Each structure stands twice: as C-alpha cells, then as structure tokens.
Image 1: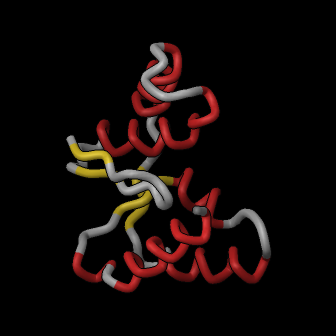
Image 2: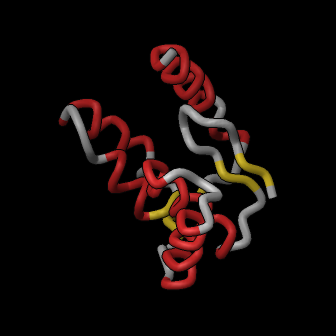
Amino acid sequence: MQAAHQQITREWWERRQDFVLFVSQAVITEAGRGDPGAAARRLAALENVAVLEVTEDAAELAEAFLEQRALPAKAAVDALHIAVAVVMGRSATLIPGRVPFDR
C-alpha cells in the first residue's frame, strides 16, 4: 500500500506545473528527514515553491483539531498542514499519501 501511495505521489509531482503550489515550513521539515539522498531530492523539488508561514493562529487551530479529535493524535503534522491552509485561505490541501482536503 505504501508503495502505491509513493507512486501516486510521484505521478502527481510530474503534473505539479498544472497547479499553484504552496507548502508550510512543516513540509520543508518533513522533506528534509530520512535518507539524505532522498531528502535532498525532495528539498530540490520544493525549491521554487512558496512557503506559507506557520502562524500562531495556525498552530492553535491545529491543536484544536487534535483536542476535538477531528484528527487522531498521530496526525499532528497533518493537522498543522490543514490548519496552515485554512488560515492562509488556500482552497485545498494535498498531503502526500492521503486524501486531499477541499474547503
């Protein structure tokens, strides 16, 4: 299943020019983890993508998602991704390996 998610993500990234992309600092942090070679490739792919600030409002909203059990505790990083998108007024959030969230 994980291999299928990774393949879908790779295919989506091949079409990324069809979209206006934004990431949060949380994405940059995640992309830099793991195998150094793979991390370098992920960070290179994000070089020209605008980075949205993780504001205090976004952090508080992410915490509210978790406190209200809108997302499980193990999805804290996903909660932050969604909260940043909501606070910054983005219409959709794509979290690789997961279902896109649309406002």
